Length: 638
Image 1 (tube, helix red, strand yellow):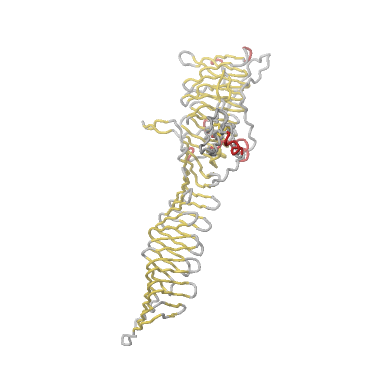
Image 2 (cartoon, one colour; image 1 turned 30 degrees about the horizontal axis):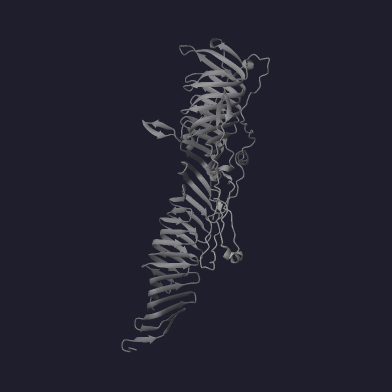
């Protein structure tokens, strides 16, 4: 002890101040400045709640600040902090490190360059190269706060939360390492494989696999070139389903292109509705629409070629010949075996060794091949997934050469068919198509065919004309070429009104035709010819009337012309405006039927295509029951 300078040199001392106790192997106590320097096995116990260990300690009893170095460990009831240099305020219970540290809290490990730990609130603030590792995710951030008691992690800078299958990015938000619940509020992005979702605010439950996005939502799947937007969205990870409402619309890439200011740009298809839902499902669970084809003027369903693959049979099991060692005879020579034939391996033994050979059990086995049965036929499509899109209420579609509206819609990439339900209307150039249900099929991302079921009605108007070419029937099937309708087949109770021109392009006659089946040919987006393709000569009746004798426009029963409802641009989908109520023509004289044929006119439909049932409700359940089978349970991943 240095009494002059009031310095004490102590071995195995114990210091007490307030509710804290200090122990170590050796120490130097400066009584004047009230400072302690402790060495080896330093231990600070504060109120039996905080324990700090280190190799060396410098403690100021006046400021109550402890400076610890060398293998520093700070323990509370929930976590362990380790670092090489730590400053700890005994009064405020705040620990600080700036040379790198780590906190371990049960299954959570957190490291950073700088850290601040508040023992009272169990809060820890981290700065620079922050990494949090849990059994479920790895979090990397620039600035973070973590509470060891509640397991909540708060982010104040660029942050990535990465799990096995997905990643969440944000620059402001929170995540609970125990419940796996998270919410984000700045520059948020969720990615999973080829899919991503953005939103001003994101909420996600990792255990349930459920997410919610609010305002300026963008869902993108780069695999099938799909983009979904809206103001309120929900994501379900288990069945890979996304649902968006409030100004919801989706864009789908096609192979068509258009010229915009002398620049060739992709011609995407834009679809808007009150509610949009998209999901990845197994292809085998879908009721796919067969592609219509024409054979001898009859529309039939193309047979789908399923690429069956037969499982390879196991290689034939070849039973080897068993060769046994032969005993030596009395002369010391080894008996030599005879060459075996193609079926049996025989052994020759000299008479002198016959008795000893009898003691051997010689098995002779035939060389046989066990033929394996052929394996079952495997369809690769059983494991293929396809995207489906469901649209509910006020459905609108815009493409440069196609526009449409309906109450509900279903689409799947498995057959590339858009299905419109509940009074749909399709427009293309100068034509309008209505029916109870309409299917539009695409091939190679280009318009291929259109099918209209029940009360199918087509109207075609030439530019700057008031003459309406009209076609109606039970079902209509049209085929496209280069994005334009080329031919249409009408099956069942077919009727038509079309106008012909003279050589000078002036309307000359109106022809009205009634029959069981008709074929309509188009040229340059205008109706060119109408042909009877019924069962026989007496199957159809036609009546021609000069245009000059027509006092008023003539319309078939069920005529409706609604250009005011037609979407005119992409903005009508992305920023929908209120439309006026449907306006019917002021004067419409119903066409008188052509002279009735003595032989009854009946539907002559030979195609196996069955018209879909008329939808009586607009509910989601109705669409699902008409389109999708029950999803099978997938086998667990090994």
